[in-house]
Image 1 (cartoon, rainbow, N blue to C red):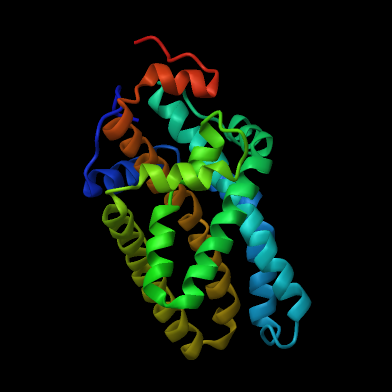
Image 2: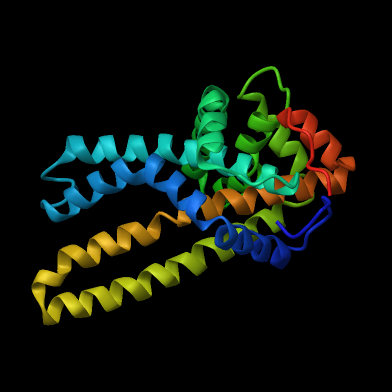
Length: 254
């Protein structure tokens, strides 16, 4: 990563830095995504090609569960990659996955608790659900990186950190999903047209769409990891020394 210090970042800077990280460490991120999301993506494609969830309900449910677990692993691994880059180290896939697995319990409890709270808020009306989602945007990051008593404590920690910055969290969610939604929609339209002209292209088109979508997971994780650091820098004067203490890794010498 180009920066040598943690500093407050505007919304656009967070997105730019996330793209830069994804480009610079594309091999590491894609490897992480393949390992963590390859199986659920393959199951999802099989269900789509085999008649949909109605025909393969069990596999569909399994793919959704594995997607959630895989996303938590991608998030944990991406946190490690981003943090290592900030500390001046060259991230590796093996180290990132080891870190993610070691923090899986905390990631799962924070992610599951956040999902339940967001779901309950959405049952009321949509707006409370959005507010809760924005407030819990960095729950997993807090649970993984901070010495909290337990993973679920990341929920309260995230709500406290995002106080006054929920609109920024909403902006990040909006830009990320609109950007990738438009990209996937465009690719899907092109693939659909190609398949309509030549039906045998449908299968490779869906596979290509699935492979491209794998980059969505590490990108989202990068965005909200940088947002987490942004919040801590703004509110708590967080610096590289504290980051290295959280990770147990010394910053690389210049």
